[in-house]
Length: 344
Image (tube, rainbow, N blue to C red; front, side, top):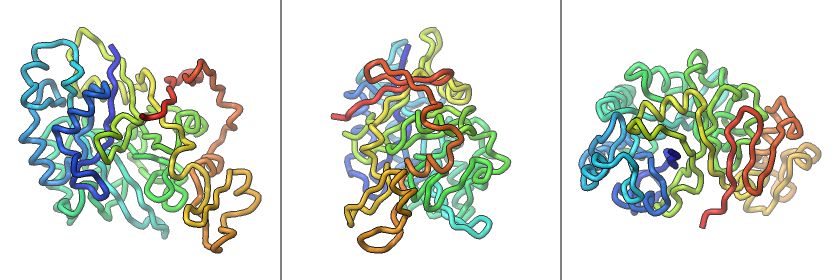
């Protein structure tokens, strides 16, 4: 049985997020779009955590349903369209200096239960992280420190680098990222079982990075409004015989058992090519290699785009990544395929 999962989104307590991002509306729109498993988002925010506890009830290990739908879920082996399940998730923004360079990294955290969430939040507060400031809290803790903190609370948690190519806030970001997982996560690099593509990259671009060969490539919406849910998603193949739970999802991610992902066209992403939006300047990677990164209009440095950054870090050419096409489906050997779509 295939289930569609969207595990990166934000609540109304995050900046620049619709006030309609409440539990009931997230469930409603997930149901409309056929999303069977949805992230809670923002479990680090105390007010949002209270709303999650008030509205959700655990129906299998690590998965939650609206309390009004609990009976329906428990009485059914299949997941009904109108009754999506929730998995507890958050995103943490780390801004810190390492070896003399400033870094800004966003990491997703998946947790199996509210007890774990409360302990993570308690440890973050003990490190002087202001959890009330934003649904996506900002901390001076490094990515390594985040891994150590989260995994010391519960080894069943997952830490997943978010939208890994975004120039400003990501693992490989051109402005504040690293050149490798090892540089970013140190001894915890083996504990990173997956990465999130983000809207400006697709799996084929990530297949060119050798160190990602052993990692699951996930895609989620990073929705800031209910209507944006599912614009990117990951599809899991799960057993009909066993009740869906957190452990199944964790194992699928850790063991690269993804059926396929649903992808936004990366060309539509905000940072696909290098450029300056206000100056209406854009450059392809060959143009940037030839012309440099100085804006010809204002003279400031261009934002170096995702495609150029991939070219900088890739050890494989685009031609080496053999992509077979069957209409809109793309795949390569030993990797889950992906489907391109235009959100309506």
